[in-house]
Amino acid sequence: MTHVQTSHVRPALLVAIIISTAIFGISNTTLVHAAGPLSGSFTSNPQFFLAGGNDSFTGTASGGVSPYKFNWTFGDGPLVANGSFVTHIFSVAGSYTVRLNITDSTPVLPMKISVTNTVTVHGSPLNINGWTVNWNITDYHGVEIYNSSYNGVLTIRDALINGVQVTYFQQPPGLSCIFFDDLGHDDLSASIAGFTVQNSPDPLNPWFEIRANFNPSLVGYNYTQFWRFYANGAWDATMYVGHIGCGWNHTYQPHFRIDLAIGNKNRDLMSQYTPSGVWQNLIWEGNYTDNGLRDIAHNSTQWRFGDGTGYYYMVPKVIPYAVDMPKIAPKIYLVHDRPGELEPDINPPAKPADPINFVNGELAYRQSIAFWYLPTFGDHWLYSVGQTPFGYPSIVSLSFYPSKI
Image (cartoon, rainbow, N blue to C red; front, side, top):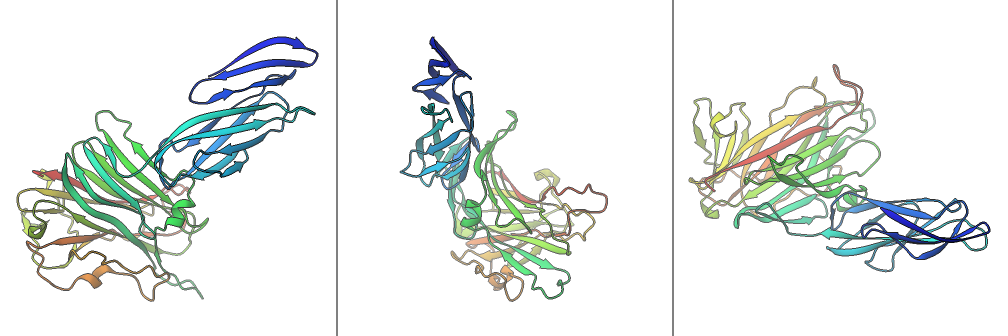
């Protein structure tokens, strides 16, 4: 709220002292034109800042004589920005004083005010609801989660999205349309207000999530990555694939690589729910495609990962926008955990990228293991039969429910 106190009146001129709250403080004694005192404020987006995000600031002014000039400083160096709408990247966590200087167009002696606000930029780790989540913006693989714990117990060694394989059913004439889209640091920086922490609106189901939007172009594709963590120890790995326009039938396949920490790392095992209604341990590295069966006693899960006593039970979900396209079952590749074993950032690749190359047929039972999660769905132009001609995102996710961890 802005408070204005007016003193004696001069011909066509007023003297005002403008005072404000600590949030959007307007200060300084300023001369005010008869048209009214100059006042201003600014808003920022997103609500919560993370280091490395491209945050936006919008200034407004009233009174005085328009047009207005807007000049900004951000408290982390000499950088100055001009205009009513600006963006800024805080590269290091901390508290910063953002200052907006507004100047009107009063002749001879323009009026000036300053608006200040202290913003908090959060870094790694995030400590919320029993979770300690370490995160890192990678060059090509989005936001990586690593060495993260729940109630002091290490649960996630490493989780990232290596890239997104885009494959066309038919190649458009004269075009090479096999893409392996990375989630690049530059694409995150291009997304205004796209990197933040969000919180559950439901107090009965508390969670927080890291949201990272990657917007590399004005056409073709748009990816948003989410790591969501619940107060009960469950968590989700999710990606939204937006629709900006592509008229040819194609598939998207995000490549998640996940390394969990449950008990003795060298004694891990993975299991799949079977038609006979029991969990079958997976003995060898390999491709274990979703068979459509679910263990309703454990959140309707298809796979589990653990040490024989405690497990994370896992639920895959694929919700495509283009519901008329062929349905493709998601799959998991079980592999030995070899750090740095990632697909190269080559776009376009000579052939579709596939982490099956890391499957060597080795023993995977009671070993140090990790896995790739590959959900796949078809897509095409914005309009889909039976749908409105507006492109809401397709969604893929893998949810993790803890038991005896």
